[in-house]
Image (cartoon, rainbow, N blue to C red; front, side, top):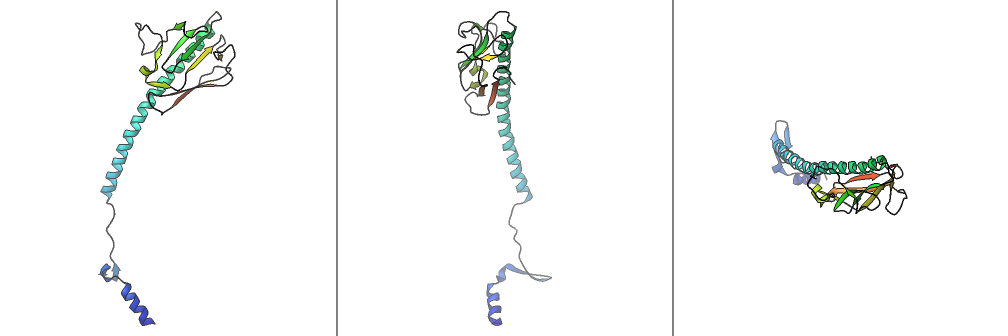
Length: 191
């Protein structure tokens, strides 16, 4: 039985994979794998691709944040006009998903007021701000009125908003990144 075990072991050993060492027989070590230079080159390529992708996204994000803040400022401006007007006029902003504008009174299409913006000039005959020129899309049309206390209400009557109004803004023709503006019901707070 011992002879059979020794015979079996000697047949199962791959004698070509063994070499002589000072200490005796040891298996050859494999020199397969990646060198440090190859690993560094791959990491540099990954970093370059990542930096390019992140910079493209941050350019869109910066422009979107800028345009969102401008729209917030216009909404606050309409609210301020409504609160500072000595009459009973309401002011508001209307958006039809192609452009938006400031208006006075209850008919947003007749008494349009000029909004100041870096994209408009004194020679523009149209007081509406073009969303395509601002390179943004607004997901849904809205009409927002502010009363003399700055409280937002819907266009159907003198009923204050019963829910917060959320305006979703994206870069033109894109679905992300996304910015939102929330007009708080009953107070008109715009964070």
